[in-house]
Image (cartoon, rainbow, N blue to C red; front, side):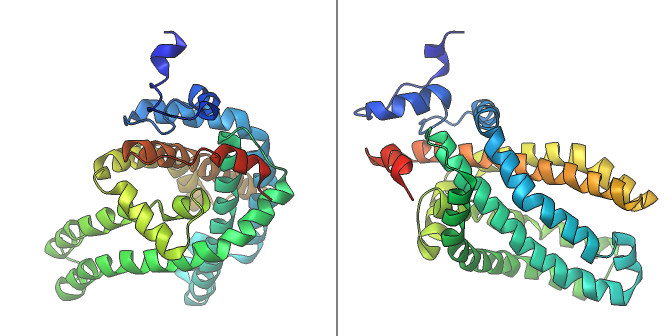
Length: 293
């Protein structure tokens, strides 16, 4: 298949400066949603940016994994002991925020890789520090909305107990949670990749998914399936056999790399949905990326 059949036709009046991006990432600003092409472009992004992603993983994710293994009790200990559980969950929340900072760094690095202007790690880190407070505030709002949709399912369990009818109703009432979570899933991309604020990121993320919910959901299904296929057996082995600390580090490293790589398809999804929703980036957008910071 020749390159002309792989690359979508450029939009009318599209700036010539976008040609190199479109040749490398055909789904970029494409008016058509192509799940397979988004996944292919994700592989291309990983290929082009593996050094940047590796630096982020080594500099940020690896220390996070090491510290978490030293501070957190094992899952069986957290389940079995009330004291361990009380120590487990607050630390988990802390590491969730630190993990979110790692994600902001991945999004920032990928943003520059897509536009052919990769940045050194210290510049990526600096840019991420600026964006992170905005992301945190928006995340609290997004999580609050998702938790509101979770209350009916909790009410079903509270009223019917852990019974067959109660569990059935609980899972049925999880449907709104999934719907809301998908709508809220791209706010971070709108903030980091689109330079929006808290409210603007939440609204724009919602608007990108609106009318494309099943398309976005289909990509997340692929991501979840790939994640479970690799992570579930590893986690199951970790839970059952409680391996030594070195093997646990290796397991967490594999899961950490997997989580980092599975962020990449959502970046290509974001840029594709801009085109699907007929949004266009300004003519000097690519140049501004090379001059930023």
